[in-house]
Length: 296
Image 1 (cartoon, one colour):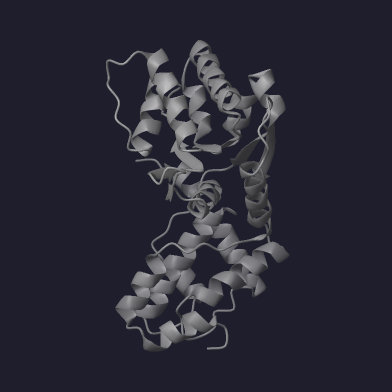
Image 2: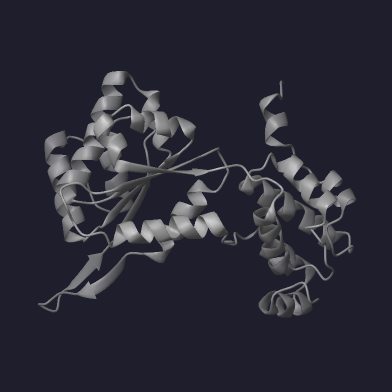
């Protein structure tokens, strides 16, 4: 089992089929060149000196192409923790605040989402101005350095007036707290940010393109194969296998991961112990393109 990493090899040798299948279903982070560069950019924003004009980052890509996984990876690397202040009292420090944009651009709902994320109480009757001031005070107390907002394209679900108001709220929070924003969403997110000239000038866009049959995809598939608890080598980088996975997934990393997960489970259950073209054909899976065209 030379195709496996040392830890995966030891696990595969000792684990039952049920344990291996459970293991396959658990999320595993796999770094790749673009993700490493983007995470480095996020870390740079975390340590960026405070100024009146903080830089921001906009992650743009198709649905299920790794945006949320990247944000989660960054967030988990900078978890909230407890420290003692100069007086010996315990204090929670939350360097990265990670939330999802509300389904429509609504300032009150946005604040509520943040309070809930921070386990902070709030009253439905509280005035919006008071809620905003309390939020700013709380984030300063918790020494929050970066605000991460996923699904920012939800901004476009509201009227133009609501869109402008919500973007002004983001701009105000960034200015008041001197805090970078990291936002992510579909390509509509780019249009949402571009609708505000002041915000668009501050956001550096990073596009996550769909995968193609190149060296980067080969490296990704090798990384997958290293951690799959299969006793035989699947040789996913063989050109026909790579092209088949790419065609099924429409070049989306989330879909690639799902295809490999389903295929690995069948390989274990069938005792074949490797992913084959026949197994790829037999998995219960519908490609994103076919889902779009599906009619009941």
